[in-house]
Length: 165
Image (tube, rainbow, N blue to C red; front, side):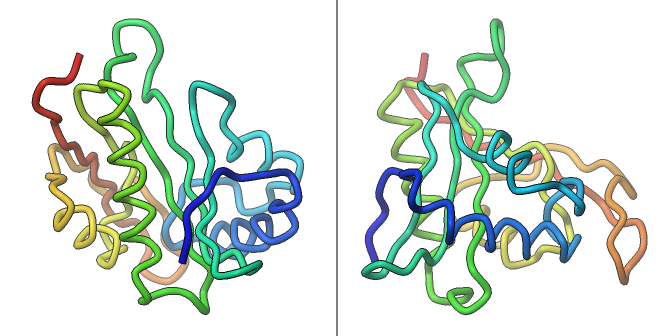
């Protein structure tokens, strides 16, 4: 598996991943009816942000986007989002993408990385982020409408980087 910069031709494989994940309504608070154009505008980061794909040969296994969490006084904190194709789940793709995003943020001198809305029932993601050094710093009760579980909690997760700006 290799992680590399997203290029326009990758969209034909990235869009189906995003479409499936968003339509499942289990892990991301995005509009399930979003179009490919809307998804592209939301997912593909402009510099100084970055969008990447994890590939095995010509097959996109997953994708990530990373950038500044908030502008101005919040610009010292990074954020990232990750999506993995269903057939590639459980194979370390999410871990590799998370580590890539953390390295990217540290190399740019961010003070930390914040995840704004981690669905509490997405235990695979919560456990992955904890293994990679994140902590739940806040929870919003019932802030996510899960399709089968009803209203579930959203976590705010954070990792501080020593020596960040």
